Length: 289
Image (cartoon, rainbow, N blue to C red; front, side):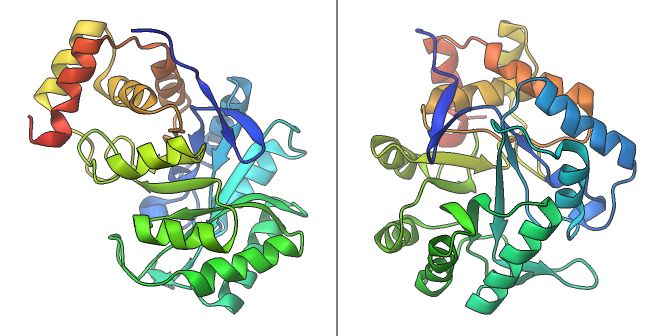
């Protein structure tokens, strides 16, 4: 198969398609401080040293923990770095994920992200559609996304995205203000967004899968293991490599708190999958083992 382009436009910037997700730098359950602060800082610095130019975070990771770590490790930020954050939830005293979708809460969240990251303007903010659970909810996103569009007009946000959204909500957002990315659950085994990914690619809009390796339930598949053994890579590297070949607009943000694991993830860009391997992997999300 021909080589793939490992860069894509994210708003008005061309970024490498393999980025880094900071969620795992917080404590257990994405709540509280990291077990090893020095190790967390080291991972962030190693990511930039390895050429990562797209970091995903949120002020509700911790809360505040990952943004504070990013600022400590990486500021002053290089001009080439794109930091993407998300708003739409807050953490309860015991770590619950509570919706915070009203305009006042979203404005407060944007201000918190600015303060903890040490920025005057956020490069990209995803509106996380959230109903208290982890599934997608139907309904209008006009009030929340519209509130972020107002903050964008005030100069506090450069670009907007949406997360955990249905195709109808994506269309609604695009009618309100330009949308540069969609961040939804998608991986080898969870393929609900196949049509949406293709439609976004046709319009030059980035798609960023969260839980690209399965999240709290890591991908497990005999087919995945078999392909990985054949190409001399780990199963998780193959899962990431499949996403890179799945569509040119897919940007990856695998997270880790380990420098070794970080480099393993980034090495997925060099994994070569031929047509037979891609066809075998494609069966996983269509009922294959």
